[in-house]
Image 1 (spheres, rainbow, N blue to C red):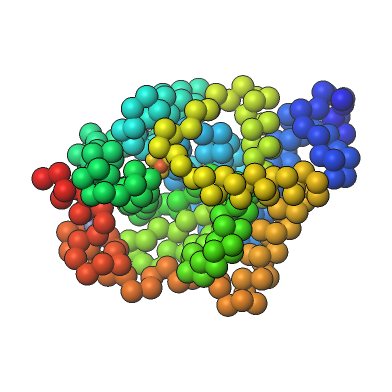
Image 2: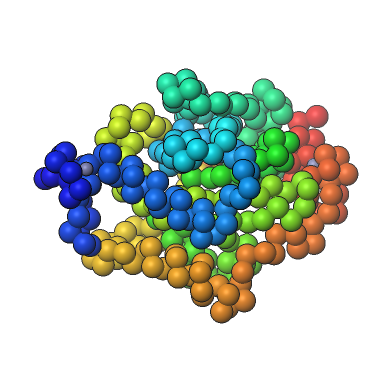
Length: 300
Ligand code: Q46
Ligand code: ZN
Ligand code: ZN
């Protein structure tokens, strides 16, 4: 099949609108989508620097590439989580991509730089590995963005966002809904602004672009990944999207542009009852040391 815009072979087909795009026109379309998200939610203003959380997965590599193509000042940060082969492969792929394109990358090792072993901590504290891992990732990413005076960008795509949103609606988790936003402002000097510029880009577009341009990304899932409920929601939404293309975009876009205001859930409740950690100075909801410092402390 030919691209609807030129004579090249198409790599992706959209049944809605009966369009097909080649790699070059898919990239042009993705750049427009990211640009629209950035402008619509005022993600980046006045020459702000960007720190991209690079996991080595397709979405983070695509995000990094598109932001560079749009001319932003971008740096990548990869966290080696110390989760065996999966982490070694993720670091290797992130470093390879950065070298191949000449993009700046910093690599932080949870074990080497902070002395935390996620799996041992999880056993010791009887917390699921993903809960410990989430604490560690959030802390390190926020700290790196604050220290480099950057906006933190993550590679959540449209399918991820729709599944998270729907999951929170199904359980009526109003607090999570209140906190969710494509752009969360920096409400404290130690809390970085966070953005999700791929919010209009589908999983299919992201995978197609990476495959058709030869971008190598981490395929295996983390061995500790258990998100069964979220995967079930994602599968159900994918079936709906298949039957009725455009549903996910409308669901997410309309929620953030109109519905959350109507419901009084405009994600600006980040600073609720947060205090400074007496040990590191970053924000915490507990009265003593923050969750990250408690993790570090559990090894001393
Ligand atoms: S890396 Fe970490 Fe994920 Fe692995 S341990 Fe869980 S949270 S599943 S995205
Ligand atoms: Zn084309
Ligand atoms: Zn702390």
